[in-house]
Length: 300
Image (tube, rainbow, N blue to C red; front, top):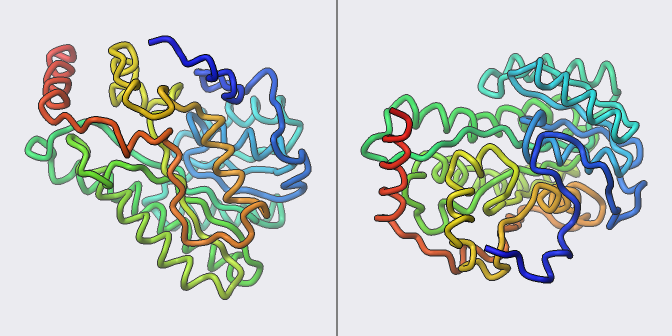
């Protein structure tokens, strides 16, 4: 499907896990000057682009996940592209002790944490009837428990006494009951509720808690694994009001807004950034189940 003529309004992006060769600021380049952001799942996809855009606005970052080799490579790219410091730290968000060690290392090396981005997640397509108990549990452990674990550790070690901003990366899956996504939809729905609860409880400490719910975003593992390329080739995105998938930079700009003083009086908000997809796109159960069945055949 050809992109609409006005798609040129989209910000720069690249489909790979590389930094952009050019970037146009929509906010002051000093918006986050000398702040520090702790980003889970920051070594690839949306998390990497979020790190890059925050760094291009003066922020130093910590990118944390289980794969230290990938994080180290990503940190080199980010520093080379932005000139800011990026600290890669191995962390498993399901294990609070690893988060605690990473936060201690962050405070030792960088002296502060101003922003927490809970981006670590796991997802795949699977009907509920074929989903194992352990698979359902694992997704909730990463997406939901991981978000709570990281938020609690950062709050106790820094935000409680210094304030800060938390942005949880959510999804629109649970808004209509998306087929093949009971695990991820349930996890993200819990995170949306958590966002509101923590905003209420931690507001008096100067902590703002918000969430960004992306739609189909090109250049991400989720887009590839969840059938985005096939949907795009079949013209499925024509049902989206903005007629296209989003890109990673657009998601990073949403995070930048929610994490910065541009949204200083916004908390407890779930900001949907999906081009209007959740309002209009078909939830075709038969087609989705057929797609899943075809994927199984290809894997054999």
